[in-house]
Length: 224
Image (cartoon, rainbow, N blue to C red):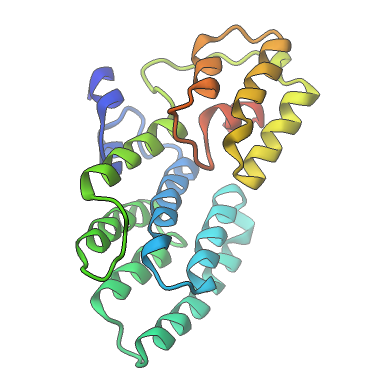
């Protein structure tokens, strides 16, 4: 894969062709979670669906809480049985459960299944997803670049840029998923001496899609 192809990539499956793919399992897991979060709008409003994604996100940051992620499977299955009214799962819900459960197992399988789940839901007549397959693939490409950045142009982050203000803002953004503060984070980084056009531009780009695991927020919080 070339840099041009990476910047134009549509669909999370392109991660398998990217440089150093698979070496950062945390980031891969967060890509999978972002894909599944996108599909929540297509699922019944059951807390179990969101719960297992949140458990998988926590597991991505702290392997010691894997038991919580595994425990989240039971209420997920119970919610699905309640929805279907029987123990056997319908095909779309089976696809959803498989994708979500795999987030607590092998991250590569979790990513693969979340992508397949996205495709399945988009084709299902009762999905009620207000988008189309091409737009969904475009968004997944944005998720990849927001989480992995540009692997062809690694950024040298000066520790002095981690001012108290920048770290506090980044922590708030990460925990709340309120990315409206990204331009403010850019200001804080610039005040601390950051002169990286890539970092500042990523924060200030109004068209940039952000999800948990954003490479700039990760750099500030030393998660990479």
